[in-house]
Length: 271
Image (cartoon, rainbow, N blue to C red):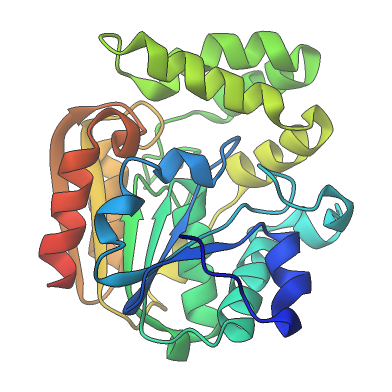
């Protein structure tokens, strides 16, 4: 059963379509680009019996309040991190286990740096603090690659989503998951998706990694074209008191293609 939040939190709850189930130590799940909280449906229920499970949609995604979207506020990931801190404050959640996927992982990391008193631990699934390669860093993409990706998104968003979804999912034996991801992309307002994509793929949050002060688990797929193993190793090396788990799976969305592996990794870490 979904627990209704107090009326004083209605603005934040409505804005981010916050839902809660269960009781116990809070565990908060954050989705990645072009997705919604529904993407955690194979993982989150495993924690309802002993945790307060909190899910939400980033503004501009899922069933969030689209009228709350302001390009100026969301010109950086800090805007989304501020929303997450507001959710935790309004619901008075502490000792939070935060589980974030992809850019949602970086948003959670930024929120934990902003107010570490609310966070007990971080689980970062497929995080990437920077997608573009530099002379001393391998993010997986050249500058030209990223510009080509963004140009394709600008020119034909729906065609881009249909092409990129199977690549991101990386699970050719589960084509229904690529179709689901494409459908999720297509339900996102194209103008918001274009803006969020630029913020996501052009961000550089490498310096923020060393500022993390809570125990952190980095969950990495062994083969991920969006966030390669080199990125996962870099993130774990830069965050103090962190662990790295490399899952024996392919693709960027292990929480959909191999949810049991993700559940086991989270359980082992927080226990």
